[in-house]
Amino acid sequence: MEYPTYLYSALVTVISLLVYYFTVFKAGMARGRFKVEAPSHDGPPEYLRFVRAHQNTAEHLILFLPALWLFTVFGSAVWAALIGAAWPVGRLMYALGYYQAAEKRTLGLIVSMLPIYILVLGSLIAILMQLLS
Image (cartoon, rainbow, N blue to C red):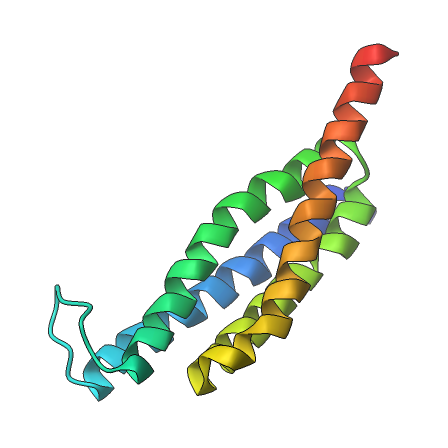
């Protein structure tokens, strides 16, 4: 059975959502661990790192998913998935580093930002090329 190439981007999407849910789970567990009652987000710096890793991942997910799918549709489905696969890896690195110390989040941030830039710019170029042809 032959599968449509967009299934690779669908798989990257599902993995990305699972990574995001991991940060949701870890932030929720940190709330209990550091005894921060809802709806407050005030707590010790250790707690705030869990919350920020979750919030920042949500902010980046909003950029990543449309970029992934625009590149899938207008560029290359296979390249979109290959480039996009770096995003959940980088986000996991970002969160795990941030949980330890704020300075340990940088490499994960870079690894997860690069695919967003590439996918957005690649989508723009692919769309413009189609409009001009």
